[in-house]
Amino acid sequence: MIKIFCKIDNINIPLVSVGTSPFIGAGQFGSKALEWSSKFLNNPNAILDILESSYAKGSRGIEVIPIGKIMQAAKIMRESYSDYVITGSTYPGSNPKIEALIENGAKIIFVHGMISDNKGRDMLALLDEISSNGIIPGIATHDPISTIKFCITISLKVRVFLIPFNSNGFLMGNVKELEDIVDNSKGYYFIGMKTLAAGQIKPELAFQYIANHNICAVTIGMVSKKQAEESTKIALEFLKKQN
Image (cartoon, rainbow, N blue to C red):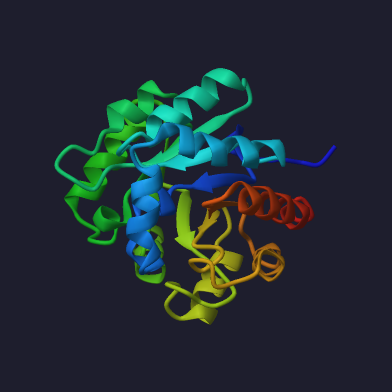
């Protein structure tokens, strides 16, 4: 049977989770952003179509941002499948919505990159709140080199990073430097996002690259059943080799 989980602090974390950037219409999708947010953000059934298709090929989780109806769809999956895992990022507003993530059983909660990349007191306070609730704290970052270096240098009690990582170097900064950090930072876990570079990379090339580095799991944004099935299957074929 194909391996579908890795272990982070003795918790099963899916090798492949569905990423939610397309559902919220993230800016990197350009002209498609509004189309996709209109289709998915407040339509749990449309989100569920993607989650179910990805689950059928071995994905066992979703990395949520608590906005729109994304959490509603994630909750339905968790209640339907005993092995379904929710991870999530805080909402980057005045209310980070940590309570909603905890109520829905999130196994890891990442501080959103809009907060963590400022490297300030807000980040530290959120990490403390997450940890105090018995949840694995993580850092999501859009500025991975600077933010990871900062966390390691001050010995911050966080060992899980959600980072852009792809063969195009999209949003990675200095690619060689980030690769070196990822491959040589022992005792830390790195989960790749933006793995298809907003649809610019074929899945085979994308996940062959991922499998050559110290990336323990990935989140993949998907907008069709076919894409969900193909991307999940290909990602697992490569990731199982290194885990």
